[in-house]
Length: 234
Length: 110
Image 1 (cartoon, rainbow over the protein chains, first blue to last red):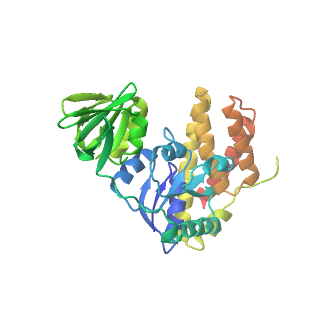
Image 2 (tube, helix red, strand yellow):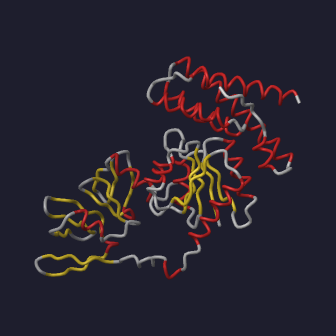
Image 3 (cartoon, each protein chain N blue to C red):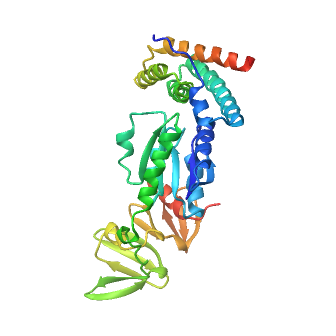
């Protein structure tokens, strides 16, 4: 199993690295001092099994990080605080909660929990659905097929949404959130309460806008982090 | 306050006879303790509560690392006080820091 360690304290990183190295079925793929670095790492490193994650880190805490990432690997929280356990288990990905200083026996117990989670038979795991390539929309009692790759962006307009493709605009009676639920989240991102964009069509990104074709689309502060997560940032 | 001395029981158990690992962990602990304690004192002088909380939190780990369970509880209560902009346990925390500093001096003399 591949793991990473995220902690701003060197002493904690050293202790955890030692405990991981003593565990035959576990290997370290990265050691980080803050969660922002981990977000960049996760964009380019799929297949991670476990994150050892400190909660109290300056600027961006472990909980902030967990609220931000989609489909996280299994997480073992590492903390100086015994009182955050209840909050910790609000996150499905968290398998255990280790209080510093971490002992060998407590670490092994946490790893047992990870192995149990990993050993769930494939039949019980949810099957990854095939990513949709098209969407059907109801316009004037006709179901019209739209190739998802052709969509530039989608704009909310009262009780309707406007789907802007390379060749034409479709006006559909629905809401942006209903439509978003039908779109692959890997490709389509809400950048603003009135806009969903196709990430593949982005030309450039500024602080509060993205350029798609010749259109400047707004990016709200709250949605900016979702957008940054989707792009292949170097 | 209960009589409690800093000790290396935890690091002895963890290193399981690996003296190189033991030396490295102790060296890291000393270096981080000294840096965190210095930053803590600066934050106290500046009355910067946010920074004080950060460094008390980091120092708690070193207190636990040195097997001082009772002192760990004091530090934890002090941290909780600081979240309410109080700091009545500051003298007790300072006493713990002095104990650890003295202990580190004995380690460095070895």
